Length: 159
Image 1 (tube, rainbow, N blue to C red):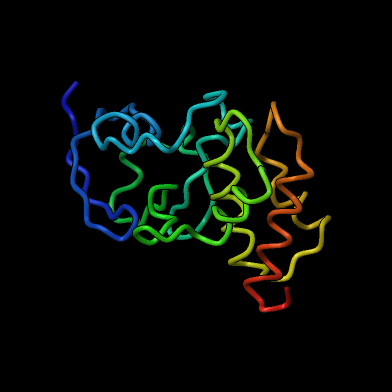
Image 2 (image 1 turned 60 degrees about the vertical axis):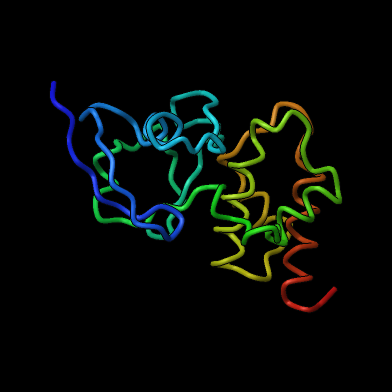
């Protein structure tokens, strides 16, 4: 089967690549595009480890075909920091040890950022609901939820 030419934008940069029509976006990111920050967990959209954004909407890269990225803006964990400056969520996750093995962390960060972009002042319940599609098998969720809440407060200038 011949590959299809895809023109998209990833983390604000125009990108063109060839993709097998049946390849997932996760396969394209981790393969020919070399963006290995997005992790593969379950491969069925149940764990959220492969969370990315498409035009600002959170999706599981394992459930999206690479060809569906044509003409859209894709956001990955590689685009979260600005140069050497970590996103406040990344910094807070580090400060509060809201990670352990790291497989879930990119997806948790992408989901947390998407949540805070929609709701900059979430309650604990809203954070837990917002991250419900992301599973952590090591750390549990308390440190992650506290890191998101503290980041939200800092970003609002309330901390």
